[in-house]
Length: 309
Length: 249
Ligand SMILES: Cc1cc2nc3c(=O)[nH]c(=O)nc-3n(C[C@H](O)[C@H](O)[C@H](O)COP(=O)(O)OP(=O)(O)OC[C@H]3O[C@@H](n4cnc5c(N)ncnc54)[C@H](O)[C@@H]3O)c2cc1C
Image 1 (tube, rainbow over the protein chains, first blue to last red):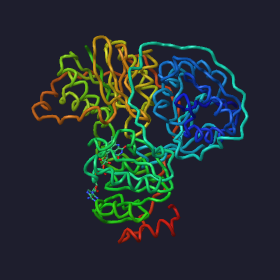
Image 2 (cartoon, rainbow over the protein chains, first blue to last red; image 1 turned 135 degrees about the vertical axis):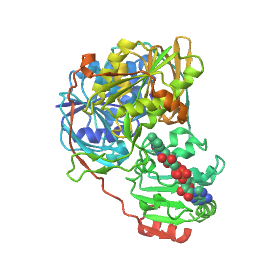
Image 3 (cartoon, rainbow over the protein chains, first blue to last red; image 1 turned 120 degrees about the vertical axis):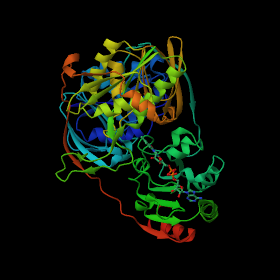
Image 4 (tube, rainbow over the protein chains, first blue to last red; image 1 turned 90 degrees about the horizontal axis):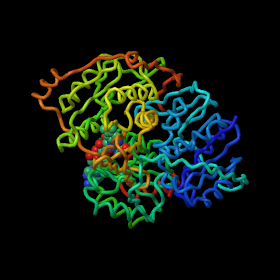
């Protein structure tokens, strides 16, 4: 048995979600090769070689892989696929974009966002915004899998010693061209990697008011998240959305402020270890999943929290 | 320009689904069904492109039992010109859906295909990308902005770190994210008019597609439920609990 794992990175560092995928992959049993495809990404390959549990690093370093265009990346993965029984990666936006193309080109099904490995062909995955958990078995010889990173511990980033092999096939398929990007820079921890997350909803009322929440975040060393309503209203950028269609988080502590607790929001945070809800409506559904609830006006609670923490 | 929009009939997003007591599947009997929210956004985007004079015809496609005609009529009430219903009682997997849509593309030769990025039932997020791969066309997934410029479409995508814009050569496949637009409601006269718009019924066999099973669903369970905890009456009490009981700060 052998496994091809696709690394998630920004051409300079390995994204920690990859380490969660390594844990899922190691539960399948078999040698794990990790593909680092990008441009000027030698440092990522070096980092990947250190990860515990990796047997081989495949480095595809070419300008055509720089932006992770699904058209190019999928063909590269398919080219390498013949040697492997499993193709697996963390369900990042690049992977969600690319993996179904890989599956279709291989004429196999894809298992999206698994949360548990039952055996080498059987997995658990949430459906209906996490209101049901399906146990699914792949009937294909090659299994294409994406992993919900929050459901797996991270593999050790150090202690491994894998060899790196250069893959010099170039697939510049054309048809899709990178134009521009607006990446949000923040000094706070990354949402999906943070041990504490504080999220704001429509109740915050405006972009300016989000600073009340950010001040508490900074006291706690927390990442900031948001509900869809807060993103749609333009209070914060889209990369902060937590939920069925946003990011899935499972921190030690999740604080929901001015968020009602719609099932689509719960889908993204209900696996958090401790949940705190701050809401002026004592009947808000968020309290049904909160370990600690505070019924009150967030405009009073947030400044008080900031001073007392 | 011709646009194809594919739509799925799913459980209404406000309904919390229940698992059958024999754990074979979820229970959809007597549950309110609706157009998948992302598909609704796809239909809206196509209509806006038509209103802007860019699209000339919108063909809406759905695969499923007879009941999906309700959603096709809804899409036509909103503004789609005609519909294709590919009838099947099975619940085809994403790859089978993509294979059927690829055949529809062969017949219809659209310049643009717009799909929802995922359906809120199976949460797979696969069909658009699979369709693009099978037809060897470029894709713009998770779109929050779509602009047609000559022979290209500019797609701004919601990605983990923010937003990314791609330029795709038409024909192309686009999948919608939530912030692409806000769908309109169908007006009563349009609902009446939609009843007379053409709706063609086909079968997978008409397109020469045979469904293949890739994934078998062994069981479906209710996830572990969280218990509601306690309500506190002050910020001090909250800080105390987080420090001394939960030990998370
Ligand atoms: C297909 C689909 C996908 C979706 N995906 C997501 C997703 O990924 N993530 C997501 O979050 N949502 C998602 N949604 C939207 C979801 O259904 C809800 O609409 C959204 O989560 C509501 O956001 P909210 O809780 O901030 O707003 P509201 O529901 O409006 O709640 C605001 C809350 O703030 C409280 N409040 C107001 N003022 C104060 C105050 N001064 N002090 C204290 N409390 C106050 C109110 O009591 C209320 O409970 C999706 C919806 C659909 C249809």
